[in-house]
Image (cartoon, rainbow, N blue to C red; front, side, top):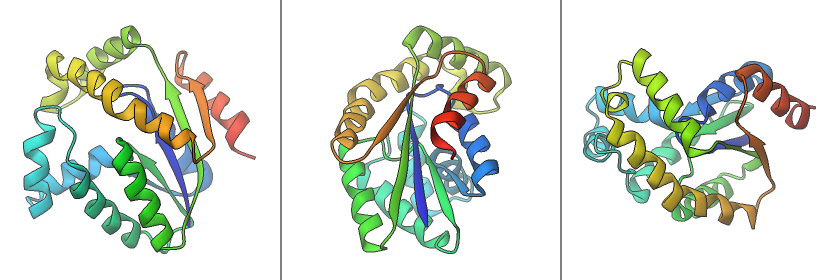
Length: 189
């Protein structure tokens, strides 16, 4: 099973591009946010713990995410590949994912990093809040907090990944189709 990682700031369009890649590659799309929301909705042990962090816009602690992703990889072991959307987000999570991959004799095929400036991210957050039923999307303070957490936690994790994995950086400005075409031209052979 091949693993593709899609990373970038909140509201950069990661999920949208994952849907495209899922269709083209026939890989399983693993949205960290969707999975965490499902765990919370089903009131699983891990979901109850996660809800305390996510509702404040905080990252779920790394050891909890490692356990969740061990389960996710095992549940999808029969798939051709998975697209990870929203994981890893910290340096520790990068190490945890590499450990899980090595333990299962898997490989990380590609890492796609979508870059978008803060002004555009906030515009997109407001637009998503208009159509989303998610309580956390309605709070502008959480929008800013998510971006700050990305800058302090995930951006260093992306730099760290660049020391070990080939990362394809993409400018996330433009229409969905323009960004999809850029990714298609460089990633899909």
